Image (cartoon, rainbow, N blue to C red):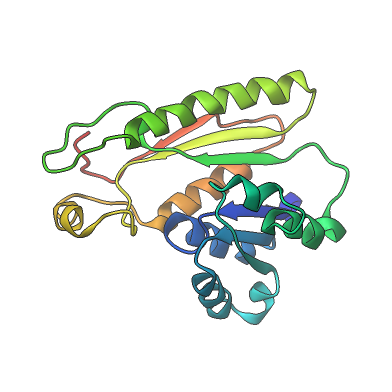
Length: 206
């Protein structure tokens, strides 16, 4: 991870679950992390939970990335993020984009009591997007890598009250397990790209 020291990581969905776990893991390894999420108070709680030296490298920004105006407007958190990170940016083209996908991005599981609705189609889109971006980076002559990480069931806030009870009967990954997978992928040598990584809890049936 030495080559990522003081490099900037932007993490979406940073207020809970996998996003929060990634923020904690990356700042602990010396990266400067900008966490984007809708719930600003949760970002503040995350920063407060970190040791002082790590908290100084974490910068939370309230932002809903599904709202275009919040990403492109002159006063948007994304613009503020660029300003915040500018002193740390260097002229490099060896970044790494990590997309959190799902097993449902490759199959449509049949699980009694759970309706996947648009979840599986949206995750299949991430699978396609990963390859599209890989080709775009290649055509632009960059060395930027891209990885899709597809976990099985993860114990996060995504479950509503009804499905949460059902989920308790299943083997589950922790959010920290997925964060470990992110670190595993980004610390590969410059000539190695993990295009797709699937991780499952032991005992998962699909």
